[in-house]
Image 1 (cartoon, rainbow, N blue to C red):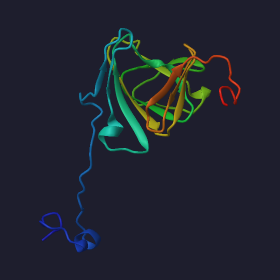
Image 2 (cartoon, rainbow, N blue to C red):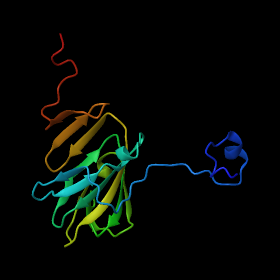
Image 3 (cartoon, rainbow, N blue to C red):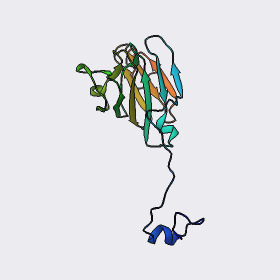
Image 4 (tube, rainbow, N blue to C red):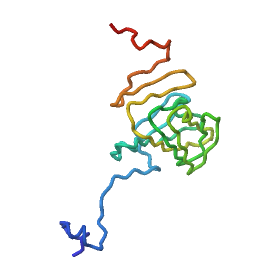
Amino acid sequence: MSCERSEQRSSSCVAGSKSRLRVAVDVFNLYADEWNRVEERPGWRSRDAWVGARLGAELLGGSLYELEPGDRLWPYHLHHANEEWLIVVRGRPTLRGPDGEQELGEGDVVVFPRGKSGAHQVSNRTDAPIRVLMLSSMLAPDIVEYPDSGKVGARSVAGERILMSRPGPMLDYWDGED
């Protein structure tokens, strides 16, 4: 009896058989319509699916976004701890980066390094929805800057937002300490 038909797989089936052992893994399809969140804010309408969380990922995060025509994903921003990748799944998004804007095509992959050179924003200037997959290292804590608004955000090691403000005067290290 082959290992695949056996009710109980023995170690000899795994180690010595020429039959392939089938292992069940979680799968997420980038073309499905299975969304975790919908953003209805005018100018920012989108849907997103938390791919990494659905697949049980620990070290790499992934979110699939579908962006309506005329809208943008997130404010222009950059991360200080995390590198991000963008993969165009469908459509022709416009990418804004430190050197200006460019149109991307299906299958294009872009890396946003940590720091100012990795600033980015995605918009949809076409007449059809677009889809992009964003991958991210999952380093925490992280500091996120928003150059257009001058905001700075910080997330704790647990991923909780602990700061969202605009910087004021630089404080002395000992300020407020007794």
